[in-house]
Structures are given as structure tokens and as C-alpha cells.
Amino acid sequence: MNCADHCAGMSARLDGEPAAEPGSGVDEGVALERLEAHLAACADCGDWLAAALRLKVLARGAAVPSKVWTEQLVARLSGSVEAESPVRSDHLSDRHAVS
Ligand SMILES: [Zn+2]
Image (cartoon, rainbow, N blue to C red; front, side, top):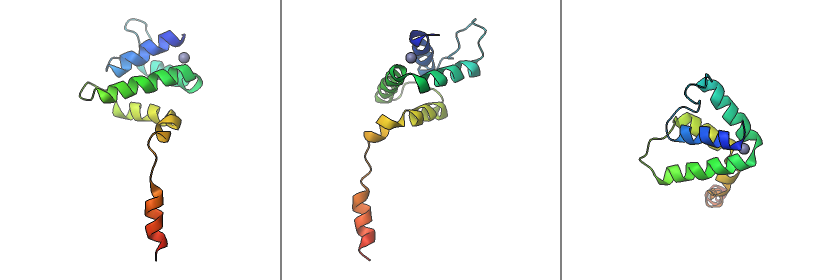
């Protein structure tokens, strides 16, 4: 399995199709585990998936893969995701300090 294979599996999953190739004899659960293991080790595919997920979110209304699966992946790639949505806690802590 190389990056192109993994991207194909992730793309299929994003489209709501099984990550396992039909007829390949690969169990869907095993296919997902392989995808996640590769994503954890491959920054290129992580970037690719993050971009693909962003497109998917922009194209809201389209069929999305299992929400839990997507959220777990996003959590694993959370470095960049969190950096883009800063939490403004300074305001809240100011309030608490005035007691
Ligand atoms: Zn890769």
C-alpha cells in the first residue's frame, strides 16, 4: 500500500463508500485500521485528508462518512485544526478575576 492507495481508500470513505476495495477480500475494519495507521505516520496523507475534509464541510449537505470516524480522524490531526480556531478565554478569565 502506498500513499495513492490510501488516498483512494480515504476518498471512498469520504464519499460514503467502503474503504476496502470491493472484491479485494479486505475486511472494512482492517482497511480503516490501515488507513488510520498510515495517517498517523504520513504527514502528506494527513494534509490531504484535512484538505479533503475541509472541502466536505464546505460542501455541506453531501453524504458524509460516519461522524464518529471523521471526528476521530480530525482529533488525530488536531494540531492544525485547533490552531485555526483559537478560543478567546482571556475575556472569560477577566470576568472571573473581578470578584
Ligand atoms: Zn501517505
